[in-house]
Length: 253
Length: 253
Image 1 (tube, rainbow over the protein chains, first blue to last red):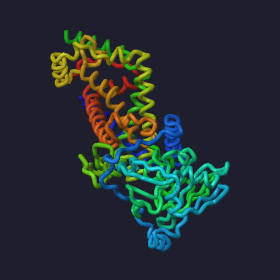
Image 2 (cartoon, rainbow over the protein chains, first blue to last red):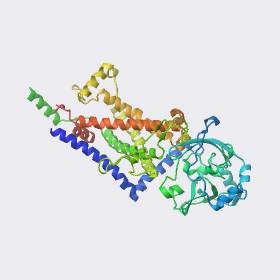
Image 3 (cartoon, helix red, strand yellow):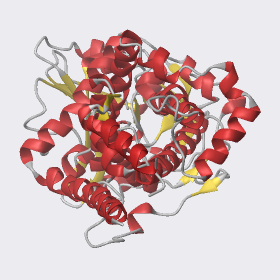
Image 4 (cartoon, one colour):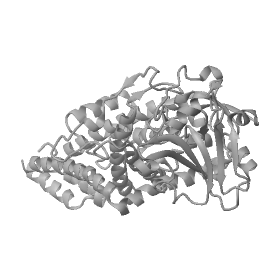
């Protein structure tokens, strides 16, 4: 009989223990020190992945028959601002992609110029942080080509993408480091599935950084800025979702 | 006579046998915490897109083979008890928990495997002998389980056949599958190790296998805890803390 009570107590103990652990997780999620420790996970993963993949390991590419029949849109599907509407109405005729910041020759590139530069086309898988995937074909110049044209300065460590879509008071932006910026599959895509990029997928230009999750693939890119540090941009965490919801800056996992 | 047996029982209770080595005990508790965090945070990650597909892609327009409930809507079941980490929906925070403890889980298993080969835990305790896998032996063990007899009276320190089968299955099949399907979900790892996708038949298949294995692991934990309670929780839990286990006498009490 005494053992029965002991067992019951033990069961209760196990349940309470698991419950306390789970309840404790919310408290840890609120504590600054614990968060910092928890957030080192992303840095560890980045270090491990960079070691295993080296600089130029390619994301898998697919055959045309492996493409998704329909590629969904998500996030902002139309910036809807006055300036964007005006560009859209003229087919982005007067639109210029700015490449500036820590570069020797700041650029303002027209869509036509982007389309006539050396191109790279790739059929890749887009992995959303939420878990879904879609396979599509993307085409555009390599980001490395633009950075070489602009002449990146020594002090530059990150490339920031400023976008046309606004979310309340803040504009969408993203950033990558130079390893990803110079990766062969990192392109500024103006075409998707053999057609000019639709508005829902980020017209006129969207970043493709194939070894990372979808939220890094900034849509509606208006300006490419080379910077030494991310501290002064937005809330300083390197991207819109990073600032707003603590998404990991390194989105390789 | 009965009295004598009881005396012997008390004798053996005074000198418990050393059953669990330090590596086994340390990994057991480290893994217990990691698994609870991984399952709890995994449920929140599942909530972000609770549909499972087969193949390389799968999103809203594609047909899922399974649509899951929203796990953050479950609980609280008992008082403050909650199922998910964090208790509310935050994909970013759930991913921080999941990816940090994924490292503990993966490198913990690796260290435990190395230690268990060195201290001969695998060879001594988990090696299945052909005679044990004979259907007669399995049937005998099944009947013994039904009668709540979990130990061979001749060799009480040995694991029974079902115990061996489940531990071998978890350590060498389920947990490695969890780790490798998890890695296959990472776009960075898919670039580093493209064979991950070949093994599992695409990222969405890997995601489905990840979920199936997580469900089996959860089932294992429930059965494991139930059997710990049935086998005498104080003795079992203490043995997993101190390593010393008392040979149960009069288990039917």
